[in-house]
Image (tube, rainbow, N blue to C red):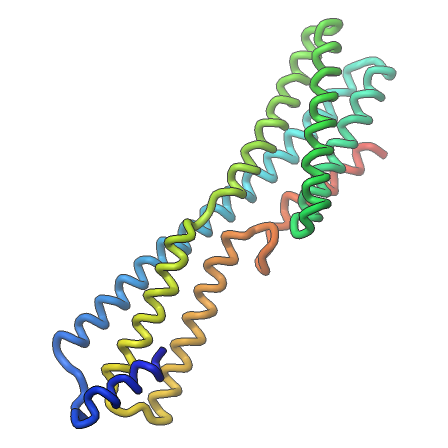
Length: 236
């Protein structure tokens, strides 16, 4: 776009060799400011999502841990049944994080989690009728566990609106075009500066958008997955 803008200037104003000044440069500065504002908004949105996912995944692992610990109160036969389903639920949640990039396995993990969760809730209700106090405590952990799983799904679906992303790229291309159009002659020194700007702009945009994909981007969030894997030791 820089080259195209400079080519347009040469073709249209081939007799004008003066560098653009005044209002045009002010307009270019305003576009840079607008692009910076939009980039800051996008980065804040992506960073917020990254932090929210990290918080939810840690809270989810804590809720599962509490549910596992509270099964120790029940008789061995009831404890074995509850722990078996909690183990299956835990494995489904681990698969959720491990196979987030593989659609089929990811959907299978969600389906398995919902199926085991439904059976686990039914068993908890039956236990609560026999042992009300410890049963109600287990119910609280199970409900928190389910709520956090749903909250995690909602947070993962949120992110930077696509229109904002398109506008971010559109402004970057527009600035590049105007920069080339307002420059009389782009020599080696100017190309060094232009290349540096383009490289930094691409890196910043990539990192900003990558933060909004905490489970499948380059900057991956592993805290929740690691905490869930550690919970496997509680079944040994």
